Amino acid sequence: MSDYAIQVKNVSKIYKLYNRPSDRLVDTFGLPGRKKFKEHRALNDVSFEVKKGETLGIIGTNGSGKSTILKIITGVLNPTEGEVLIDGRISALLELGAGFNYEYTGIQNVYLNGMMMGFTNEEIDAKLQEILDFADIGEFVNQPVKTYSSGMFVRLAFAVAINIDPEILIVDEALSVGDVFFQAKCYKKFDEFKKQGKTILFVSHDLGSVVKYCDRVVLLNKGDKLDEGTPKDMVGLYKRVLLGQTKEAQEKMLSRVSEQNGDSNLWKNHYILNKDVDEYGTGKAAIVDFAIIDEKGQYTNCIEKGTRFQIKSKVHFYEEIPEPIFTYSFKNIKGTTITGTNTMYEHASAGTVQAGEEYVATFEQEMFLQGGEYLLSISCTGYDASGFTVYHRLYDVCYVTVISDKDTVGFYDMNSKTSIEKC
Ligand code: ADP
Ligand code: MG
Image (tube, rainbow, N blue to C red):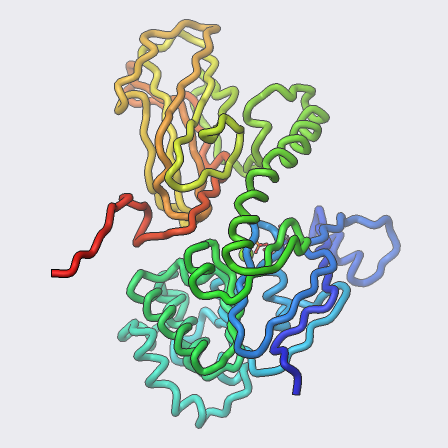
């Protein structure tokens, strides 16, 4: 018997990106024609092992290949090169929805998942009550899963994954969706698992939990394994990578953008912009540039929790406008607006602006959002004869990553000073 629960050996994954669905058909059926896809290397010769009884964490920025490697380990995806050896029964909680049938009820999905893991109906019967108790979603277990909120969904999915008695538990970033009591319950279960000598592999952006629960951490970066080591060392390295990476990303971006429009002096070219930005407005003003700047003065979309940072937006006015309002807001990935402000709330005024003028609004503040990814929106609005008017708005123009090694409950950290005294 091997000491390893999981062995990942020189795994590479290349995704083919097609411009049109018909190009995929041409390729799948080997029809003659020019190669009509681009190759994207999501994993590049990655190797690591997870020992039996070990809790291994995988960290890395968005798009570094974490979900891809978990999918390959669980057999949802095949590697392009390399192989994965597994010793033990895996239960996995991948991205929301994997392994669930939306038309089935909660209970039917419990059976579906159990069967997929090789359990008989009777074995699942025996575990059903425990699973339902853990999920604690009441009567909803008899409703089709498509009616669930993402919170309910993750409760059920996690309850199944964790109570089905796996030898290896794999969890992809899913826990952050559940509420706090549920998260606590799950982490307690992690502890029990560890005590029982089970193997856990998990991906999280909550670096505090990574440090707390993992024995060892693998750091991925753009498909490469950068390093592996103690959670503290890897979290430290990760933070350095995030800062270093922005420089590299910046150069790449500048050359790409200057190819496109010959103008590399714009602030916004330091960021990866959302191609699907939701943009509208009357056109009387245009947001021509914007920036996110950390406390060291670097143009970066990675901000460490507890540090000061700035958001700037530069607006060109095409007509005379009285008291334009500059705004920004942050949404979480689920689309909930978490915070934001504007120059009217903040009592900053440009007065009446004239056609042809440009103004820059600077918002400086401290970052208190929890670690994770957020979408930034900016706009220029105001009030004219017809009432509230949006001159130009960019919804979800880019994302901002907040790095933190301590998370609190909910959306933001109130920065408590905490002490305990013996009475
Ligand atoms: P992570 O989980 O670390 O954010 P992923 O494993 O989801 O990263 O993605 C790694 C890279 O592979 C990203 O660049 C992503 O855009 C790309 N990718 C992921 N899934 C697919 C897919 N089905 N087709 C094409 N590219 C993909
Ligand atoms: Mg992922």
